[in-house]
Every structure is written in C-alpha cells, then in structure tokens.
Image 1 (cartoon, rainbow, N blue to C red):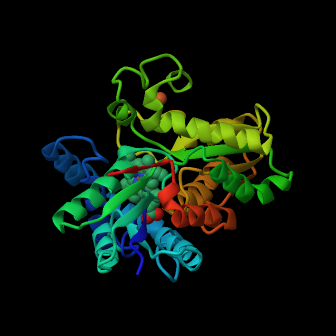
Image 2: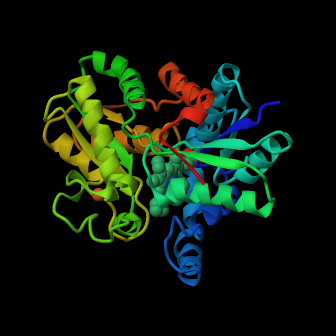
Image 3: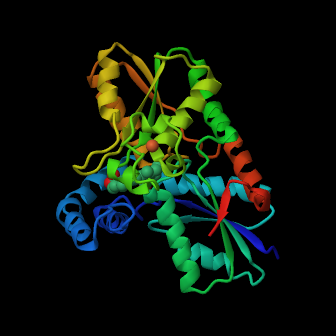
Length: 347
Ligand SMILES: C=CC1=C(C)c2cc3[nH]c(cc4nc(cc5[nH]c(cc1n2)c(C)c5CCC(=O)O)C(CCC(=O)O)=C4C)c(C)c3C=C
Ligand SMILES: [Fe+2]
Ligand SMILES: [Fe+2]
C-alpha cells in the first residue's frame, strides 16, 4: 500500500437544481469567512436578509438550465477528470468539493483508512490564488487533519497560473476554435473578486491597488494577488497563441453584492465590444478548470444573449480544460512525481 495519495478539490455545487438544495449550498458557501470577509454577525445578517430570500430560486433556475443526467456540470466533469487520471497515477487519487458533497472531510478520511498513508498532495483546482478558493480549501484540510488527529503530511500545490504546461493546455483547448477564423475578438473572462479581497491578501499591505499599475510592478504581493496572476495567464496565452494587440481583451464576471469588484465587468465588456463592431466573439474562462454554472449559464447562455442584444452576432464559449489530454497529462505528472514538485509547500 502506498504511503502517498492525492486529493483534488473543486468548489462544489448544490445537490439538486432546486431552491431548497441551492439555499443550503449558498448558506454554506457564503457563510464562509474567506468568501464574505466580514465578522460573523454582519455576514449572517447579509446572507439571511439579502441573499437567502431570493437568490436560491433564481440560482436554482440557472442550475436547472445546465443540469445533466449525472448531476451538476462542475461535479460530473470533475468526476470524469478523476476517472481519466486515476489509471495513469501510481497512488490513490480522490476528489472532494469545498462546499456540498463529496466533502474534503469524507474524502480525506477515506484516504486515511490506509494505515500506511503518510503524505497527501492537495491540489486545489484553481490556477490563481484567492482566499475565497485556495485558502478556504487549505484551511478546511487543516481543520480535518487536526480534528481527526491524522498523522499525515500535507503538501499543497501552488497556483499554476503561469505554468508552461497549463498555458499550453489552455491554448490547445482554444486552438480548434481559433483555427476557425470566423471570430474577430477573444475575451478572457475571469471570475471576479471584490477589490477588498486583494488588499486583505496583500502581505505588504501597501501594494495591491495602492501603487500605480500595481500588478505590473515587481512585488512580493504577486504571490497572493489574483489580479496579477490572471494578467500573467492572459499574457502567456497571448504570447503562445500569437495574438496581436486589439484582438483580445480581459474582464471579470460573476459579481455579487454592492461592493467594488475588479474591473472591467464582463457584462460591460460584452456591450462595448458589440458597440465597437465585434460580431463574432470567442470567450475563454481560464480561472475555471471545469465547466460550471458560471461558464455554461452565465457566459454561454446569458452572455450570448446580452452580446446579441447589443448588436453582436455570435458568442462562442471555449470549453474549460475539463479532461483535455494536455491537462490530464500535466495533472498526472504532478500526481506521480509529487515529492519532486518544486511549486508545492508543506502545511
Ligand atoms: C474560479 C474561482 C472562483 C473565485 C475566485 C470565486 C469567488 C467568489 N464567488 C462568489 C460567489 C459565488 N460563486 C458562485 C459559483 C461559482 N464560483 C466559482 C469559482 C470561483 N468563485 C465556481 C466554479 C462556481 C460554480 C459552481 C457550480 O456549481 O457550478 C456562486 C453560486 C451560484 C450563484 O448563485 O451565482 C456564488 C454565490 C463570491 C462572493 C466570491 C468572492 C468573494
Ligand atoms: Fe496586484
Ligand atoms: Fe464564485
């Protein structure tokens, strides 16, 4: 029996595309202090008064429009990825969700049933650092290890936003869509973040959004700056794919609440691109490695409708990496050689 194992973690989905299931999912998700970064009483008040009364029904409707026979796209596609990986990996691999099922706790405990287990490589399935995705997942792993007194070392894979093979996998996924020269612009649409999250994650407390062109100036803050990291992903993609200035732009989607979020918003960018005369638009969403509600409903359905209403002709979503062979190859290399991964830190 191997003394090593791998645990992949994605965000998670509701159990069903129904208001009740979405309510308990949203409650778990948004009561996470790494997601709504406010003291508990204020967070409880906001979630209970402004989110839970109406959003579950709206989101359930959105989920229903993308739901598959085998469940939510995010969970089903993550399971397909696991199925593609496991036969090529020499150690057990498990898949968990930060919210909903299968939980990080249940999957870590299953792995720990192996008495020989001493080391787990934890792979948060996010290319870019954010407290609301990476930190919360790592903290949940720590909580489970402490609660159950598990005698295992945890190694966490660092954000891979500019790993050459991740960029190569993105370009390989996009290539068939780009080869069809009918498109006239590519929009890189990343999940948004409240600006306050960048400031909280800045270890210097004086760089992110405080220095002019902060994300382009050298700084130790980049190691935890989501905005810097997504710029880098776009830049490396553009270089590898040979895109020219003016052929692409970048925006942030999926806002929630009234705080200031990263700019520009995907919605405004879609309107502006249509107004500038872009007719056939490709959209790629590199912050998501798996297609989910935010790509399939927000971009491919709602985004396409908005773009056409604003004068565009077609919006084509480039799929996420999902189980693309280049992405599977990269994950297999990490899983099989994780004692030698440089970009991983021990908890
Ligand atoms: C890709 C990285 C993600 C970041 C960063 C992120 C931050 C973030 N998200 C919310 C609020 C919501 N996100 C929702 C769905 C959702 N978010 C991500 C990824 C990131 N979120 C994914 C992959 C998904 C899809 C889940 C699925 O089941 O397909 C939702 C739920 C859906 C809805 O009601 O809109 C909310 C709410 C915040 C507040 C935030 C940063 C603070
Ligand atoms: Fe920054
Ligand atoms: Fe989100």
